[in-house]
Length: 143
Image 1 (spheres, rainbow, N blue to C red):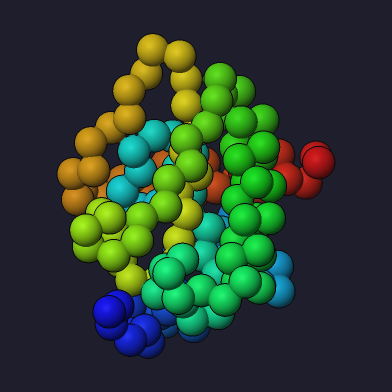
Image 2: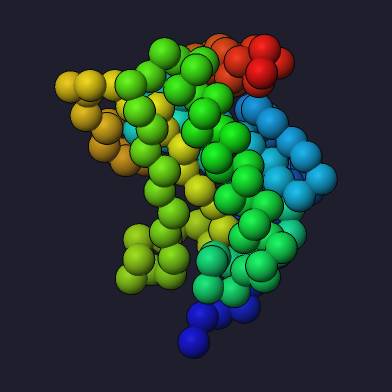
């Protein structure tokens, strides 16, 4: 049985404005931020604004909003970075590889012959993240 939602997880704190982030996109139901430990240039995260530990406890409305925003961001990051493709990842519970227990989807632009960087736990340069966030916002504005 999954544990209860923890209102003090890092994404809940970001959603409440208690921690900084590089915001890329926001609507009434979702927020998109840059991953601070990106596995590729342009790696961003789609978060629902509603409390959901993961897909196993997310209501249909939250799941649908996350899916819509994920599709939008997949198209946008490919355009923004001139990528050859995109990897979309989502993990549920520790056995499924989940580390932060607020539903989130990874959207990572991909390029032929370029492997994903390892998830090392080291943070990316904030200036680079800001630059990548601006590239994505610009591509969104052109859509």
